[in-house]
Length: 154
Image 1 (cartoon, rainbow, N blue to C red):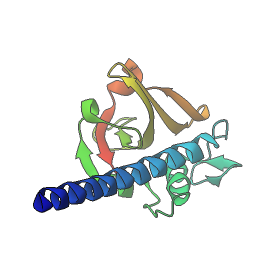
Image 2: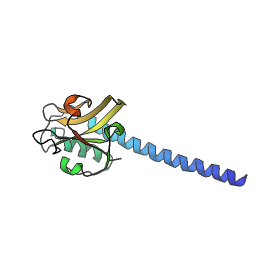
Image 3: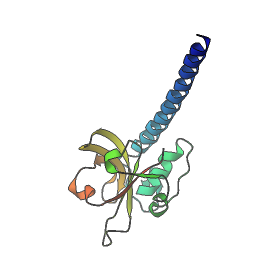
């Protein structure tokens, strides 16, 4: 009986630690997304990193700074961090890398998954060169055809 009680108590303590870690991680993800959303409407500026003007990789740098995380400054460097996941398994907070322009292989743009309602309804936030910082649906031909990688940072 005593062994069963100790085992049960250990299990409860261990599961509460896991739940606490999961909660802390979810809070960080929510804070990063929330910070990115404060930039909605900010105009695009290549190399910019403030509310006067910001580019896609700068938006992510500023967003992750809100939870004390330092990530590389450029899209080319950001693609080297995190764990690669499929779009189907993507979660809020994951980074999505795109190839626009002449070379369909060279990654030139990055955004962050901001809301997933279902497999066909995924929103992401990014700094569009034509519209500034926006949150939009990912599952549009314009974006979906150009996705090159999805990376999990958390």
